[in-house]
Structures are given as C-alpha cells and as structure tokens.
Amino acid sequence: MGVLNVIDRLLAVARGDAAADVLLTGGRVVDVFTGTVIKANVAVADGLIASVGPVREAVEAVDLAGRFLVPGLIDSHVHLESSMVTPFEFARAVVPRGTTAVVTDPHEVANVAGLVGVQWLLAASEGLPLAVLVMAPSCVPATHLATAGAELDAEDLEVLAQHPRVIGLAEVMNIPGVVLGDPAVHAKINAFEGLPVDGHGPGLAGDWLQAYAAAGVGTDHETLTPEEAQEKLRLGMRVWLREGTGARNLLDLLPVVTPATSRRCGFCTDDRHPHDLLDEGHIDHLLRLAIANGLDPMTAIQMATLNIAEAYGLDDRGAIAPGRRADLVVCDDLADFRAAQVFVGGDVVAENGQVVGSWPEPSADPAAVLRSPVVDLEALDLRIEDSGADVRVIGLVPGQIVTEHLIEGLAAQDGHLVADPEAGLAKLAVIERHRGTGNVGLGFLRGLGPLQGALACTIAHDHHNLIVAGGDDGSMRTAIAEVVRLGGGAVVARGGEVLAGLPLPYAGLISERPLVEVRGQLDELAAAARRCGCDHPDPVMALSFVALEVIPSLKLTDRGLVDVEKFELVSLAVEG
Image (cartoon, rainbow, N blue to C red; front, side, top):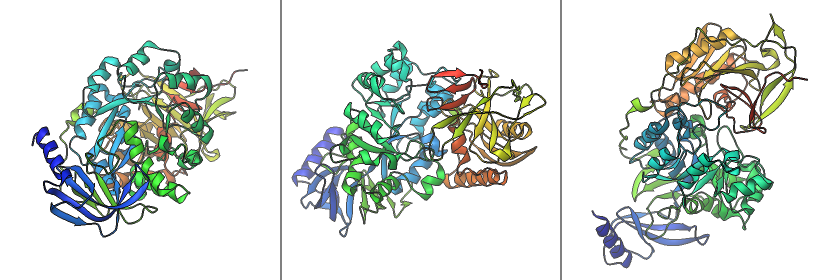
C-alpha cells in the first residue's frame, strides 16, 4: 500500500468513515501529554493509531478488561554489543519486557571494525519488532591514548547519516576537542547540524561545561551527582538516568527529578549484560526501581517514552495519539510495571514475557565483523621491572565504572614487580589486538579479590584490545592464548589449565548463540573465577571498563596508564 493510500485510510478511520484493523477497548490509556489516565478506545490502521477515544468499527476488537495501555518504552542510550548477543537476540529479550525502541551507539563494534561494523549492525537489526535507532559513533577511536581497530572521520559519518535509522551523533567523549575547538571534532558535529548530539561528560562543570553545551551537545548519561545534573539541566541539556550492569547511577540522580525538571530527564541502560537482562529486565526494571524509590509512576513513564521521543525527534512514537505508531504495552499496575502484552505496529509480538509468533531474523554477513586477535604470543613480555618507587594502582569502585587512582608500594621478586593475590592485588595487561603493533600496557588492579589465576577478554571499552588480570604471569599467558585461539571472547585460567571460556567471534564482542546460552557461559566464567578467589560479582564487566580512558580516574590502555583528569599518559612508577 502506497504512502498516500496509508494516509487516506488513516484519515478515514480517524473520521469514523472506515473500519480499523484493530480496536483496543476497555482499557485505561496513559496520556503522557497531560499526565492523566483516561478510559478510551484506541483504533489502529496499518500499524498506526488512527483515533483515541471514540468507538470505531474494526476487523478485530481486543478487550483490555480495565488494564493500562502505555506507549512502548524507549531506551535513550544503549550499546547493543554489551548484551554479547546479536540484535535479534537482544530484541527477543527486551521487547517482551515492553521496550519497543532503542537509541543505540554502535561505537563498540565500530572501534573494532569501523564503518563496515556499523553497517553490519544496521543490517543485523533491520526489520525487527524492536526499532533500533542509531547514533553515529563520534569517537572512533575514543582518544589518542589507545589503539583502536579502526577510525571514523567526518566523511564516514556523512555516509552513515544517509541511512534512515541513523538519527544523530553519538556520545562525544573528546571533551577537550569540543571545548578547545578541534577542527576534526567539530567537523563531525557539523555533519549532524540540526540533529541530536549526545554527550559524555562525567564530572564536567563550570566553564568547560558551558563551552560543551554551547557546541550543541544536548544530552548526558554520564552524570554522577544531583548537583552535576542540576547544572547540566540549567544549561539546557537533558540528563539520562542510567542503570546498567557496570554503572548504576539512577538512585543517586533521582533527587534531581522534580515537577520542574522531569520533562528534561529520561532513562537509559548504557551497558547491560545477559544476566541483568534476563533476571531484572530492561527499561521496565528502571521504571520499577525509580517508582519503588518515590518517583511518581506517570512521571517515570513519561521519562521512558515521550521525553526520549522528543529529545531525538521521534514524533512517530513515544505517546498514544493519532498518527503515531501503534507500539503499545498492556500492564496491570503502573507502580509495578510488568508487560502483559506488547503490540508493535498494532500486532501482538509478546505476551506475559514471551515472544509471540515467528520473528524473521535479519540477514547480515558475519564476515564483516569476524576479527581474530593479532597477538605474537612468543614475543609477549608481561614482566615489570622494579624501580624501587611506589607505583600507581587502579582501584575498582563497587557498582561504578569510575576507578580510584591509588599509590602503593609493591613487592618484587627477582627484580620485577609481582601481583599479591592474598592482598587482593592483581597484575593487569592490555595487549593491542587489532593491528599487530606489539603494544602492551602493564599495571596493577585492586578490587577483584584474591585472584589465584587469570581472567582475560577482548571486551575492553572502547578500543576493545585484549585485557587480562591475574595473580601470576603463567596463568595470564594461558588465558591470553586461549582468547586468541577462540578468535575473541573471555577466558578464566589457572596455571596451564583453561577453566572456562566464552567465544565471542563477532568483533571479539558478540556471540552468535542465544542469550540464555551466553548467560550460561558467563555463569561458568564467574564460577571459575570464584574458584580462583575472585570475589567480584561480575568480573567480566568490571574488567572491561578498566581500560576506558575517558572515565576517571586511572585507566590502562595498550599505550600505558592514563590519568584521565590530566588526559595524559603517566608512568607506572611515582617518581620523587
């Protein structure tokens, strides 16, 4: 049916001159525009809402029996790659929970495979019941302080901007480049003039925040405190409250959400691992968490629907109103939000947490993102010479991706610094895996517990080199070798024995297996890590963020230790 015919029929149904495809009756419609709940009928024609209120003739009538009808939920910022599964598997996990659209930044796969990686993700998410709306990655590589597998310049982003599901520019992490007017950074911003530009400014305040906002950055999901959120809101930015697996900031920021500010706030998950998707849920979990801690249910639903749609110019969704997509969620209780039924384009796609019908799996050639690690195992040297000085140590912070910048005196053996598992100190290495440069960054990590063995993986935000932490060099080398053999993934080893492994052949980030199976493999990894003394609840997620050189305070890349506040490489040894 042509566009004109769709509009003609939509108008005819809206006027009451033609029968709707579906009429949802007997429900209580959540009106996010006025913040009220109304008893109304909703008529659907060709996947669009034709009318809200009056009775209409319809081919099919569905009695909602007094239940609530809510707009489909939207995630304002998520990296699909962090689910470790394909977009198809991700959709099967979140749509039955009520999420019908996500705004995603595919910079994880882009940092490994570049433009073709983003194009693969677009192909792999085509035609799903979940609308995957892409923000073009702005920082590939994230900084000059690490070696990524690819680069995206303004011309590459202009290619992406032609795709109908690319809607803006993703999180701009190069704050100095924005604030100081770097031409390359601003060429990317200018390529998306008039479209949304997402931010990434943890702790950013004062004059630099003024300049960041002046450059056109409109949102931030990295806000850490209510005071920081309030300053960003005052400057016209929108603040997304994040509750992911690695970083959980929602409850910290909830006090900033007031009747005066709530319409400039929204929810995002950012990075969410399989066990959280399966056990807690997606945006539905954030709704329940916020409401249980005092947020008004109507405000929470606005923050998960209309607020995000308005921020990204998604006028076709985010509310139950004529002309918008019939992406709808039926639930029994707004305060304890759980999707009983999910409609996408007016069709039932999920009921009671389960997929309904046969969803076509998109066709996307995996060859575009197959990237085995390029590591010379024989030349690899993990030794750290002892200079006699105190050294910098990365300290994990529970529930956060920020880290501490610790200074400690360490033990040495045969003239080399070593881990101290019983004291909770692991050796850390980040090995460049994309280009065969031989770069190896070495350091120490506190926070995994008394690790007697090693954990290695090819998930190391955002450059995604091979990262490994361990209690001894032998275990570390075993884990590294197995990750290389798998073609990417995560491994736990002790001595010369591999205890558990998770293959991630797609860019070293994504499995081709179902979500439940990947979750089982992650559970085996965590159990193996615990047998080695690791007491962190999610060691893979924790380790994956230790290399993210844009999040304070101290990080490690293949080029060495990064003092994030100074935005520069620093020596392991503290001189003087």
